Length: 208
Image (cartoon, rainbow, N blue to C red; front, side, top):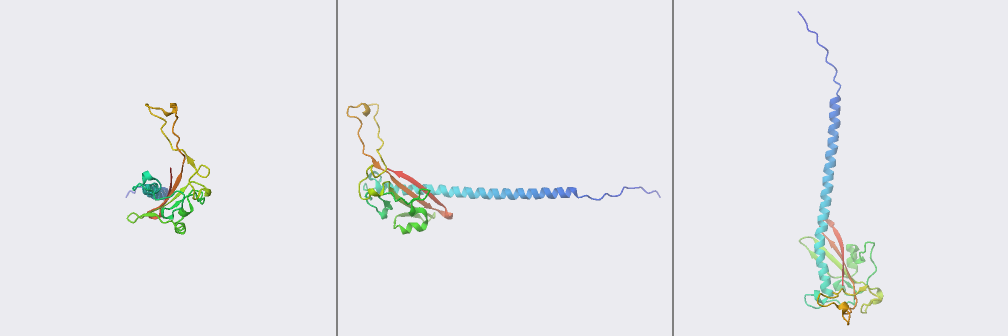
């Protein structure tokens, strides 16, 4: 009987298996990094959405402040604030309180607990969205202006803007000159909006 000679089977080195395991580990790490990146992106998008949702309600506080301060913004034509006197019912101070933090936020709005200790009464809430709005109005005058009408000596004031003329009449060349408008003070409205998921936004507006 004739027997065929065959070469012995070589020992398996396992190199391909080792490389495949390394590739699988690398792919797993890449998948984990991708999942974490997507989660972080979702969190950031959610935070931006909550922030954007708090800006529009803040406009309501500005409108409330303007209606309480100015005749032309009041629905009844009669503002409820005497600018020379503090009025906690309208969250109003006749002078700058000088208790801002480095962000420029007045003390009553810095934390939720601070609000109650200042006796300010007016706040806006929407139970359906979980949004709560608190605001403080300050006449930008130093303490010496308490109880008196605003003056450049005590208050941050600028004359109102006026149209110098039209194509029909230019007051700058009129012998009588342009009418002189009295300077008016600035009123600072600082707003805190607390929304869902413990989101908080601060906004400020200057009224005059």
